[in-house]
Length: 229
Image 1 (cartoon, rainbow, N blue to C red):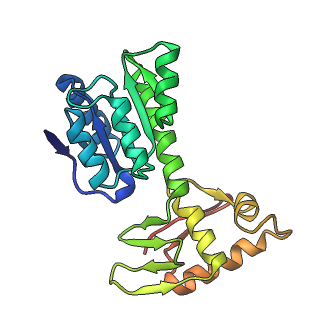
Image 2: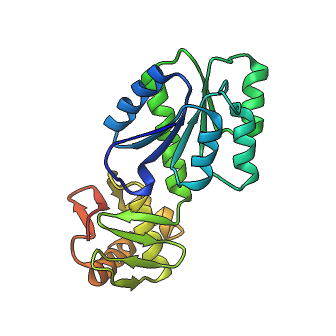
C-alpha cells in the first residue's frame, strides 16, 4: 500500500517513508509535508523496495522491522541495484550491533525510536543537503540546470549552454537556493581561490546576460543568492 501526500514538487523535494506503523506513518507524512516534501508511504517492505527502485527520491526513511521484507535486506537490495538515495534508518532496534548492521547495509544515518522530532528533521535536512551537493539536475524556479551537460532549460523549453565556470557558479547557488553567499565564499568554492573577488561579479554578469537579470539576486552588503528565470 502507498499513500502520497502534498503537491507535485521538483525531484529534490521527494521523500520515501517505509514504515509499517500506520499511525506513525501518517504523523510523519504531515510533519514532512509541512516542511515542503512530497511523501510516499509504503507500509511493507516489498512495496517499499518497488518504490525505491522505480521512483527518484531525495531522502529515504526506513524502518528495520517490516513485514514481507525487513529493512536491512531491503536496503541491501537497493544498494545492489545502484540506488544511492541517502537513507535514514528509523527503528526501535537500538543496540550497537543493530546500528552497525544498518550502517554496513548502506544507511547514511540511524535514529532510534522513540525519537525527538527536531532531531529527526535536522538529520533529514542534512541528508537532503548532501544529496543536493551530489546532484547534477538542479531546479531553477520553473527551469532546470543540468550541471553535467552545462545546460539550462528555460521555462519556455529553450536550452542555454553555459561555460564551465558559469555552470559551477550557478550550481553553487542552486544547491543552496535560500542561502546568501558571500563573494569570498563563492570565490573560494567556485574559482579555486582566485585572488580578486571581482571575478564573482564578472561571472554573475555573464549569467545575467545569458539567462536574464533575475537569475541571480544581489543582497546588498552581503553577496548573492539564487533568483529566478
